[in-house]
Image 1 (cartoon, rainbow, N blue to C red):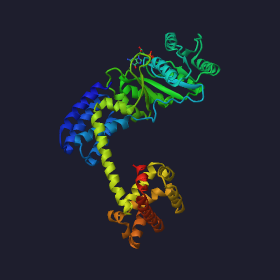
Image 2 (spheres, rainbow, N blue to C red; image 1 turned 90 degrees about the vertical axis):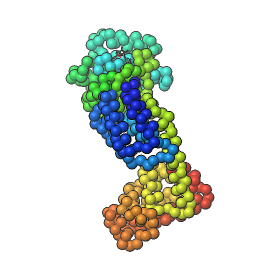
Image 3 (cartoon, protein in one colour; image 1 turned 45 degrees about the vertical axis):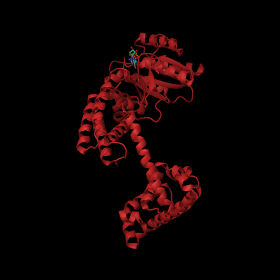
Image 4 (cartoon, rainbow, N blue to C red; image 1 turned 135 degrees about the vertical axis):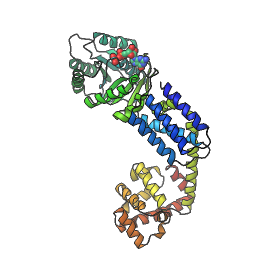
Amino acid sequence: MFENLSERLSGVFDRLTKQGSLSEEDVKTALREVRVALLEADVSLPVARDFIKTVQDQATGQAVTKSVTPGQQVVKIVHDALVDTLTGAEDPGALKIDNPPAPILMVGLQGGGKTTTTAKLAKRLKESDGKRVLMASLDVNRPAAMEQLAILGTQIGVDTLPIVKGEDPVAIAKRAKTQASLGGYDVYMLDTAGRLSIDEELMAQVEAVRDVANPRETLLVVDGLTGQDAVNTAQNFDDRIGISGVVLTRMDGDGRGGAALSMRAVTGKPIRFVGLGEKMDALETFEPERIAGRILGMGDIVSLVEKAQETIEAEQAERMMKRFQKGQFNMNDLKMQLEQMQKMGGMEGVMGMMPGMGKMAKQMEGAGIDDKIITRQIALIQSMTKKERANPKLLQASRKKRIAKGAGLEVSELNKLLKMQRQMGDMMKKMGKGGMLKQAMKGMF
Ligand code: GDP
C-alpha cells in the first residue's frame, strides 16, 4: 500500500531534513515535488492543491521550534496535514449496531470485493464484538454469488439466509429481517447485487432494498486500485442511495493510493475499513494516524517534533503562570482563555475541568457572561490596539468609545469585560499563592 507515494515522499524529505536551514524557496521546491507525487498517486487535483496550500501556510507561519531542524518541522506539518486529509470519522470501526437486529447494507460495483468484505465484517462482528450475525445475498442475477456467500458463511461460522429460488431482492431483504428478528440475531447484513458500472436498474434495486431494510449502516465497497474512479463511484452511490462509509479493498496491492487520500475531501464520506487481502481476516479499521505513518514512513521525526513542541508549550505555560501569579493578566490572556472556552464547549465545559472554578462560574453568570457573549467579548478585544491589549489600564473614555464602536457594541459591555479581566487577574493571583493555579492550568494545556 502506498509504496510509490511513500518512496517519492521520503526522497523529498530526506533531502529536506538534512539541511540545517531552509529558505522559503527550498520549502516551495519540496512542496512542488510533493504535489507531483500526490498527483501521480492519483489524488484528485483540488485535494492535492488544498493539501499543498495548507502545508505551505503552516510552514511559513510556524515559529521555529528549538532542537529540531526546519526540515523536520516540515515533515511534521505534512504528517498532520495527511492525518487531517484522511480523517473522516471519529471512530471509523464503530458500526451502529445497537437495537438488534441491526441491518447493514453492503453496496458497490461487481468485483469490488463486496461479498468478501461482507463475510470479513461478519467475522469481525462475531469474533471481536461477540455479535450474532446473519448474512443474506440479494444477488438474484448471479446464483454463483449467493453460493459464494453461503460458502464463506460456513467457512467463518456465520449463518446465511437459506436461498429460495425466484425471490426478488426486496422479498429477500424482508425475509432476512424477519429471520433476524425471530432468530435473535444482533445484526443482519444484506449483500446487494453489483454491476460492472453504475446503471439505473441497479440503483433502483438498491434503493428499493434500502427503503424496506432501513439500514443503520450503508457501506460502499470499492476497489482501492481504481483510484479516482473509486471516488467517483462513491460520489454516485452517495448521491443516489446515501452511504455511511466506504470500505476500500485491495489496499494490499501496489495501488497508487490516491483514493484513500481523496475520498473524504471529495465525497465527505469517511473510509471505515480497508481490505488487505483475500483471506477472511484481511480487514483493518481505517486509522488515519497509522496510514499517514505508512505513507510518510517518518514516524521518528514526527514524534521528535511532537516532543520538542510539547517542551515549548510547557515553557510557555510556565512563563504565563509566573505572570499570572503576580496578578499580571492582560487582554491577550483573557482572549486566549475565551477562545479556549469556545473550543472546549463553552463555560460549563471549561469550568468543569478546573478545580475550584465552580464558584467563579457562578460569579461570571451573575455578571451576565454566557457562551453567546464570548464571541462579542473576543470582538471587543480584537478592536483594541496591541498596546491596549497588553495594558488595559490605558482604556479611558475616548478609547473605550472607539473600541466599542469598532466591535459594534456598547461601552457598557466593554466595561463588563474590563471588570472580568480585573477579577480574573485577582483570582489568578490568589490561586497562585495557594498553588491552585498550577492545578487549574494543567487542565487548560
Ligand atoms: P463482489 O463482486 O464485489 O462481491 O467481489 P468479491 O467479493 O467476489 O471479490 C472479487 C475478488 O476480489 C475475489 O477474488 C476476492 O478474493 C478479491 N478481493 C476482495 N477483497 C480483496 C482485498 O482486500 N485484497 C485482495 N487482494 N483481494 C480482494
